[in-house]
Length: 426
Image: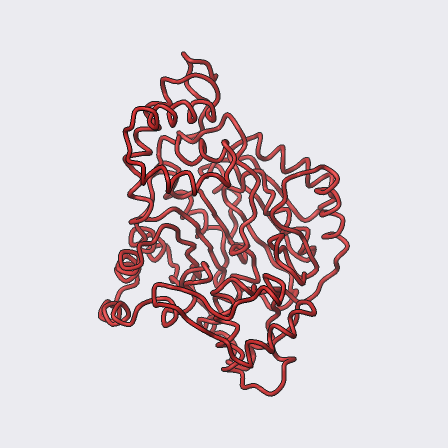
């Protein structure tokens, strides 16, 4: 019911009168996770095009999951979501594209535990933890533990404090005012937002920031973001502690710019953090120092083996994220302005400008020089991890179906993995 006298349809307090907008997140791809694990000295769940299983918890309409499945016919994929509309939408697209390696299930996290069987190599959950009740937060983390095999990886994306915590007063107000408005969740959000703006309840600086952040999002996104009863950005120390208690080792951030602390954190920050021994407290301190808004945590369940030697890392595949002429050999992080304009970096760009490839094919450089350069290019957003080439037939068919339907697409399926659409050389 969405009338003025009715309460919006919700699932455990989560807005459910409309579908969440289709989205794809690059940092939840298997190749991305593998690189982050191996670069930090841990074994990845798979090698090359080895068959694997990935489970997405809170998959929405499974748009991103289906892109991944179309790019990996050798994999098995399971999507879990409590909204029937999401699962129906994803299932219809999977059938139309002829995907046979995807299973979509409509279930809440309590029911899903009955078919979690410790068979997954990867579990992902993006945009769920900070929007559901405390009970379902716990169930989500329990599910990851039940579904993953030893050595499997869990990538968890969520709104984090202290950054998002500053929006708590706004969220409380817009949520409260929307309850007495009429219409759909998007209409109620807009009505509440206009009232707050018109009454001058917040300073102009807030609106400058808010409008710049939200112009690129559809109205449905804003309702899903702010109108949930259990909206509550997370403190990383709570999340990391909860995963450690479930037998996981915290690995690091999947957000590219967080790969290397020496390029991201100020020297004085690193000195402070070096005095903190336990990972939950260290992550909390890092978030406070860096004013973190988002986190994409990577955890490994009962790590089983060390990662490959340094020279072996050059055999991983990469693709450029921009055309070679658009690449700037510099980036800005909290640590300052960092230049990586070297012959090794330029050689990598020339090589990958021809298409996805391995760094090991570039001669004349030590492995350390190539890896330092690709680290910087990855952190700056100019290169992304890819997979060895696979059969492109399923990916090509899936892209054709999306194009024919005029579906909004922010990524493409490819023989080297699903890749954000603006990325070149795929």
